[in-house]
Image 1 (cartoon, helix red, strand yellow):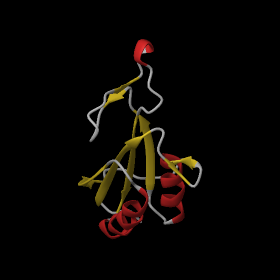
Image 2: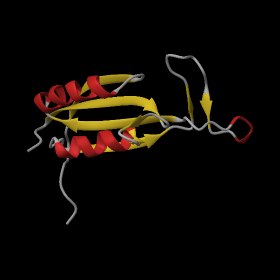
Image 3: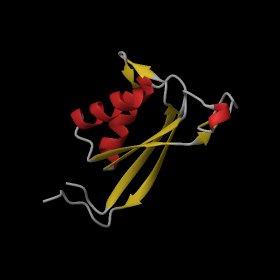
Image 4: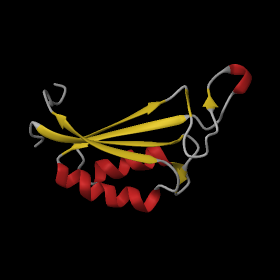
Length: 110
């Protein structure tokens, strides 16, 4: 059960990153579900850059096959901390941030 005091883990990776032959973002979401993380969402960016300082963009003339992807995971601090250990093993290049999140509403669709 998710309480009012939750934590948000935000994972920044590239769209072309892979794990076991599948997109890394897909692997992370499936692993998060297996680990019982309360929720996960994948967002695809239209432009960005990271550690390499190379700009990746969705503009037609500069079409990139490695657009930025953000995975947001929400749960209690204990579960987020445990899942961070999984991420440390699979993320070769990227950024992970964590912040406290006040849960205002969390319910399943009926």
